[in-house]
Figure (cartoon, rainbow over the protein chains, first blue to last red):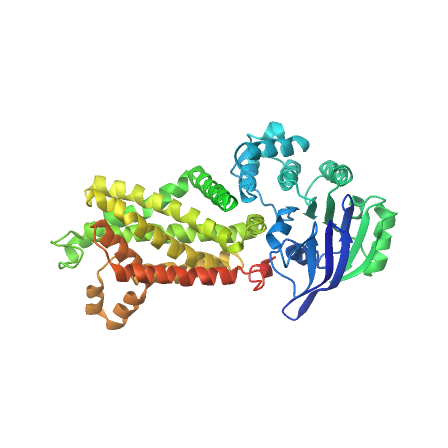
Length: 239
Length: 263
């Protein structure tokens, strides 16, 4: 299977076990919501998948390439939207795109074409000359998604991408990424603790205290899913 | 290989755009050494007597002596500032973007280092132009010959900064370490006074200055400006660069997870 495979990943920070034998797989064309309360291990998992650091045990495969065996090929097949903002605020939208293209070895006309296409798809083409500092939160996130798609990845990772956005921007981005998975065959891993970002039919992975508590296809959303999530994580309040 | 060079170009362009976009940074980079040159050196000219030591063949003014040291100062502060942006990048997340690029980590860090060093050296030349207008000049070819020495010194202090940045969690901590690194490195060097002067004051201080790789960086620049070679200074600078770079790579090694702990 291609897409994203996380197999028996364990990791600890000092004495504390952050992830304990975490396994799941996302097929191409699927939107997978990684649901977990704060401190569940989502950020550690993202750090491992993006090879910011390497796991103590287990392995990760991206589009058929093992991260421990062919890390550069695997990273090249992946687009990432990090939880923290990763844009240069004082550079223009266009310059931010070209910088990323360069990091991925895309240059010259190919870079300009890829940047234009990616911005166009996210409705950001007309803002290419604006400095990122002048963009609102929603547009910045769109830009980051456009940038993550520029090199034609097969797997898209998004770590709580709607934090700090208003309801309308949030909905728009959630819808758009679902469309990307459906129409472009991307495997999407979307980490969140907001249950209303999960749609019926999405793959659902619930992570709690470093362990996988459930891997399923969501049949619920909104309050029903919140109740389900809370019953699994044993929390008495929604995040 | 093309991918490697494309990334290098992209990282250099980004650093250059960021640098030239912040005019205040350029001005502050120049003001610091110029104050030393115009004020400190002018005041100390009368107080300090300099004997003739290589590479000088005649008596020189204190301003002439101090300029290569101030070149080193520009490189030191600029290199450390570049590392400061690395800590900021880590806090902002842009470092994650860089490190998740499909290129070996050693290359990505080296690109970052080269980009920062090029910016530093450009600042030194801007400073040398002003120093020349002030009357402190060197042989024309000296300005060219000093380029590799400046680049090596810039790489050395930049690599030290990157190594330090990998062990530091936040910007506040970095400011503290800067005080413990920059000032001792600068004052315990041959930037402001020749080593023999130091040995007159204290043998221990002299030994510390002689062991400081930054001293050797400055001496390689000083000699090159007068079209003379100083193999020992080059060797020590290159060795220190290699050691700092290895430390930096170790700090950013995914398996070591120094960076990951900040995630």
